Image (cartoon, rainbow, N blue to C red; front, side):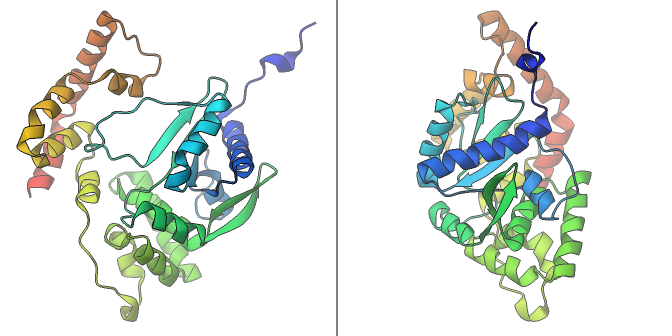
Length: 301
């Protein structure tokens, strides 16, 4: 008789919890400083309402990124293809997946909205972590003020989405109740997040604490304006030097194979398959034109 456990599969919730334990163990074995953000740790800290996360988000120093991803690779985790155009889509993490796991692992080395140099930013963040037990494993997580900063920046990327608005309202109430605004302000200054976090933090500060608000970076403004991938490509094309525009336009119309694989790692990459996927891609672009037009009007306005 066959063992029924041989065919047992992890649920997404189980995979995410065990994934945290796995990554923590790998980091400990390598002596890598790693802490976890968002997901179930935020729920345990009381910073998010209970919900199932779809991946594991871990933060490491930029200097440890390759070692961390390499160690996960030795355990069967492989990098997911990404769009190679880092000017249009600036990279802040490496995503890996595994054929036997129902979730991905995002290894972060920077965070959108945090404009301080990545290495120094990590040192600031690491000094503001604490210990928590998850899935039977001791892991490092952000302090409450730092965790709220992460969640607020993440939600502020898409503030028009109902789920993001709800999260910002929840974090606002929590920050007021626990009087965490000054701690978030200090971390925002040291991580270069003041400009990005202003819409969340501005109304939470006492008058004596209000800083001189800096201008948002081009990268952050582009993230907010370009809610559609097509918008991001057009805005990047407009901002690029003239000598770079022809190649960027060519890559936008006829993308590298990694772009197609980033949407579906099992995509058919035969000539016919590529043509079908490009046709579908152009169709998505045409259907998104009203939203792209809205984004571009905001950019020009």
